[in-house]
Length: 453
Image 1: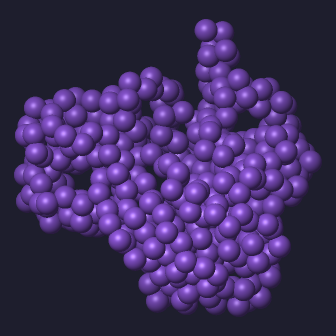
Image 2: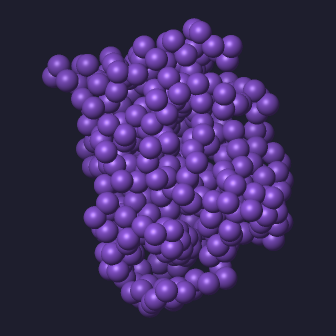
């Protein structure tokens, strides 16, 4: 189909740009800056400045919280642009109107419109060539302006302070849970990482902060004080009671300073209730800023929110199949907690693959809290760790480990061969593993990109 061919040509064109997310080599953090991004967006007429923005950083939950805020605003009648990363199946997922990714033809048109500016910025500035992430974020800003959205909800990529999205002057900032991740880039302590994430806090702009470790919270509130930014600590004024739960969702009662809410959240896990509280706090803060929000939109939006790849139940019987993009020790702990909270001590067949830059050894440790057998796999992601290395690390933790498989689909086939009717197959270790399992089960054609060096 000609439209698809044009789309893949456009994708290939953008992938000629430096891609530190998928490429195997990343620059030192000291080499990141915002000057080139500012110049690129200035050449496009600063589209990011024309739309009220919600800017979200954090280690875990920032994409989910962004989706929740978008769903609530959409339920209140607003047209909302959403920027997230990474994607599961198609890079068009990174630019959405509401929950819907832009079309392939829209992406192709975006490349055609913006590419001359991308080349000019790279050739005529002192800052070097535009990166792939900078292109995607600027393309989103341009598309949202052209689409006349009412709000844009923007998730940071890596960090916050020097992230390409941080040229925004939002109406509100949100910082979700902080834990150790990307330590080679962001720092090897919570205080260093918190400082980077808190770099999205702006002068006099309200900031919503999810529950944090004390050292992280102290860093964030200190930076907010320096910026005269009002702080909304979610844990101070918001509480939740889980009334009931099953594999289809959890029924919540939420108490806020404005009112009480009751709704069924389709996303599972205690951490998702924390994300919901952050989203509600953000929405109520937006309302305080003078933006009308329909009274029932919180309950309606959160009852419909969809965010695949995060404790997503793909099969409920013979055996159960769940995927989750957990990719650091903290998220693995929450994943194991969620399994144990929703299921009665099942035998768990773990299809596990990881990508470079994450703490493989300590990611595996929480799996010892389950009756688990681990199947090491390698995903298609260029930074995927060799499955044999995953297998060795798993064995070192005394986890029962099968032979290693060179692909996720082969590992999944082996999992089905091993699993009994009442067992759980759990695909995790990276979002790419979750995505590839979903593609098999849902029969989604994968987007295959050239390997990057």
